[in-house]
Image 1 (cartoon, rainbow, N blue to C red):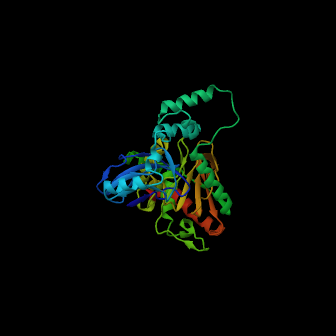
Image 2: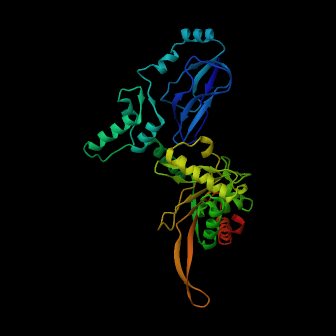
Image 3: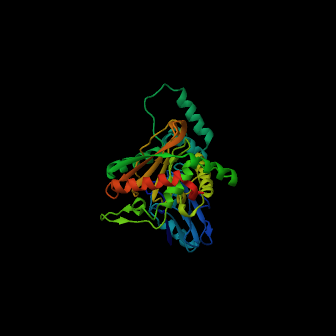
Amino acid sequence: MIGIELPTLNTNDSSYTLVEWLVPDGSSIEGEEPLAVVETSKASEEIESTGPGILHVLVGGGQDCRPGQTIAYLFESAEERDSYRASAATPAATSTAPDTELNITNAARALADHHGVAEAELRGLGRTVVRTADVEALVRRAASAPASAERQLSKQQRTVGAVVTESMRTVPAAAAYAKVEVGQAEELARQLSERTGSFVSLPVLLIKAVARRHAAHPLMFAALTDDGGVRESERAHVGVTMDAGRGLYTPVVHDAAELSSDRIADLLTGFRSKAFRGTFQAAELAGATIMVAPHTTEGMVLATPIVFPGQTCVISIGAVDDQVLLDAQGAPRTHRFVHLGLVYDHRVVNGRDAMALLEDVKAELEAPAALG
């Protein structure tokens, strides 16, 4: 008998949801193959078998589970499984009995999270499978009910809140800001977009510029260890904050320094689509060593994001701001500026180091030839 344990898929979650089993209980498994789909607050992930055997399910579809929990067994034979079922004090069938099992489709779960519909309300429907039409009916019923001053936050938003709280509790943050002229960078982005067909933007060039400064500023890509040391990263893995209306995600551009700007642009385009649909894989959200936070909505000049636990700094970029200045001959000329904000863990990074990184990134964006 081999136990299939649920791995840690998202360090910010204490529980996940086992959405569905991809193979029926009691099936013969030939080797390593996908068995079940598990959802965290951010992504869906397939759980694979650890070898061949007869599958014995312990956690039913739609039920909550926790990291490290054994969700199934693999038996060498059907006879061994039958013997276990006969002797088990709590048969596996209990966890998958029709009166306790609740299967929620991915689309229904996303809609429920978006509207703050709690799982208890879904269970109250008395259905074994909840679809989008069921959630829509609950939402319409709530809309027609008398207004209430209270509603449940989605699981995803509660996870964001936990991360923010942990950051504010544990990271003594400081901030620095720089004003950057981006006329040349915008022109480069336009040229790259026309030449490659990719949507190259200022945040794309910022990601590239930040990644290129990894070797010169290793502390900005480091992590503070529990014993007061610092663990430096060998690569520049740049996370990007992204909200498409379904909650905050932080997908990661891995090895960003090795990628061309148009390749980074293509990755961001794909990330936006996944943020809208809520279809990220766990690996796409893991491993960031520094974070970039675009706040480019028109009129948004400055932003002060949080430092994510396990990282030492985050860089924000605001919207472009036109300013008319006099040139050397006294004639008015329009300049295009953005403000970069650097928030950093003061336990690891001092003001001088923060200013040095901002100066280097500013120089990269104001003379952006190397970012092409």
